[in-house]
Image (cartoon, rainbow, N blue to C red; front, side, top):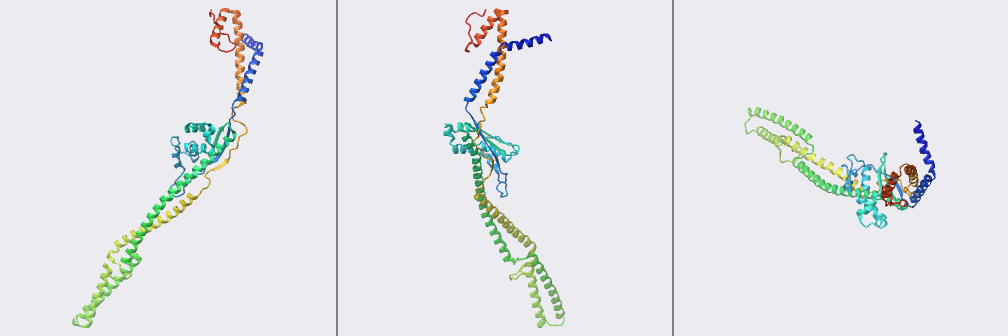
Length: 402
């Protein structure tokens, strides 16, 4: 315990003996670091915060959406469950958007870079995009000019909105053209279906098949009852009257006419009455009528739906409203983000203090070594001269180390 206390106080004694050297060394290094930090170029970082829209697509019934824009960011990894904000963050780093921003701010001339690849790399290096926990998109740009930093980061937001509008308009135009072609095709199908239904109705006088079938059956039953009554009456009169009797002839003609009418009801006739519906063909006609009616209804429904979607697509194509909301617009920052002078000076002070203490202890060790072991002292001087002789103030020994 005593030895350690002696060694500790010995250490403090060595530091105290060379406190002037330590103070001067630390002060010089710290002042030099502060001076260098003042000479370093100042970089300013401007920030803007935007709220991307919810991904609602074109509202045309098939989910056209912002995910289609991922094709602009080919080569960029994208999470499977990406949100619209994540996708916007990827688009900000796309070549298409970087090109628009560079042209708007004339960055090729500003940075004096002719190669587009090098220019995009420079812009990307000075840019930072991240999605906040709240789902907002934060954009930052760093430059030596505060005005330029604010202008570029605002251009990112403006060009992102402009690109999104153009893509939305393009998708709406493509949707309108597709719907227009489909609408024309459905209109032709509807006209054909209506014509076939009308031809069917004209041929079979099919206005209300169920009602017409009921009336036809009732008429057929009535005629058959009338036929049976007349046949009975004819049989009775044939027993008492001759075949040339006027009553017999009248009954025979009546029975023949009734049979003709029954045959017309069951198998169809040439008359154009409401009941011109062959009973034997009713099952087949009902199926055919249902098929034709269904075709007309389907075509009418499609035509109505496509007409509504066509109007929506035209509205979407003509709309030019902002697609993103700028929450915080960037302004030229007043304070530089780097160099961070306070951090540089603090780190320089701490490091120089450790180096100064180490050198003080080392010099004390060399003094003791010179007294106790001159040979080892000479060897140490030779080693130091050989290793650090290139430094100013350090003498490079040329003699023998022994």
